[in-house]
Image (cartoon, rainbow, N blue to C red; front, side, top):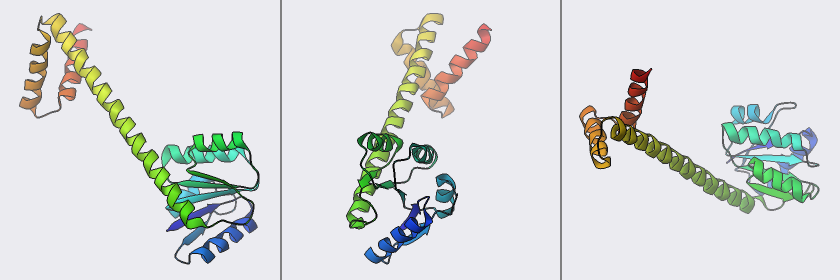
Length: 192
């Protein structure tokens, strides 16, 4: 498992890396370079998991996590020295999969990594389902708009308009959504 350790304190990051190696020498630990932003470090290292270690809560650091999750989703674990419930909520909202308060000593990491990865996979699955549902709603809206247009302008019944779109989709070997969108664009152009 490739683990990227991102910490602004190089000494702290090396200590964390050493603790990870002691727990499992199969871990491949990559340290973020001094001054390297999180996105660049992830692109360079292609890790399975990112550990962000902060001596104190840093809201600017959460911007990096947000940007990472917007571009390339990867499980992010965060270790913080001091407890701050509001910061914890912000971190989870930013995309942190696992949040831990604990100081310099690292707890048994394997169960934490497995849990973070499972939570991350579940969240990714939910996000994919949400995106799929949005696409289906958008497709349904396009088809319904095309049917309404056919009903209004060509005086078709709703079932006839649907059959018309289906038949044209089969004839052209395209999705019914593509046919409906083309029909809407074509009629809009004719009207202009």
